[in-house]
Length: 176
Image (cartoon, rainbow, N blue to C red; front, side):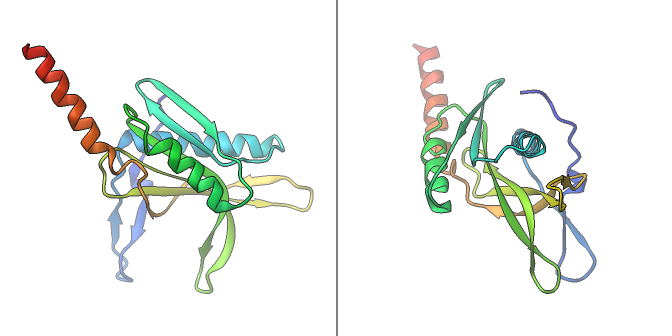
């Protein structure tokens, strides 16, 4: 996986109407995976291809990608969850799909590529999105930078215990 230029200051969430901004902390490996997912999906759309929901697992220096087609949204999410929740040795995952976000005072729906993911043992994941518009000729125009969408479920939540077991086993093996 190639390193992406990362600037977490772009992921700011407005505080409770006070005008203050809260810094969102996203582990660097996770942000790189999520940004890569959005880049891949946006390139597919610009080529006129359909974005089939897919996951990306960061294992060492490799990014393993798998598509999750389904008859409905729940089926796609379930497939991704099965792939990710048992991914021992992965440092982070992303799950990317074409969806929408609700913005503005009237919660208007806006098309958006969304990448959500997490890291082993973290209490929750993060979702970022790349809003886009499609004109009458079918030309897709994306926002310049991803936006922070929300916290998300972390399908790797329970992998921390497994990771700790592997680390302890390696230490015990060295002592023998």
